[in-house]
Amino acid sequence: MFSQGQLGFAGFFFIVFVIAMIYAYRKDLKLHNLFYKGSYKILIAFVLFIGILFVIKVFFKR
Image (tube, rainbow, N blue to C red; front, side, top):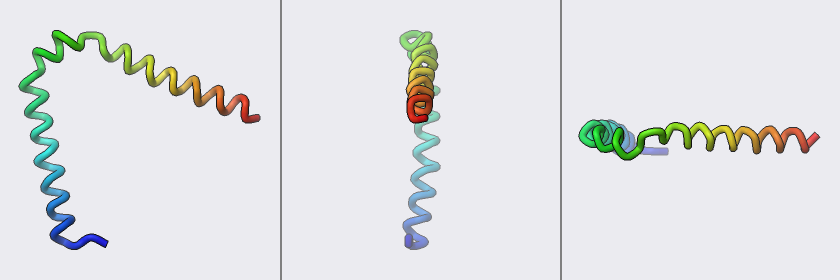
């Protein structure tokens, strides 16, 4: 399906991309803490909302 060169490039690209994202996150960590404090609450609310929608779907399907 994919050649050895394509798989090698994909693996290399993924590793370099992850390293670059970690570097960029570490560099901006102080700004993240300043401007995005409490954003985990929004994530929890979003996941809870999706879960409630799933439960409603299962409940009314029966």
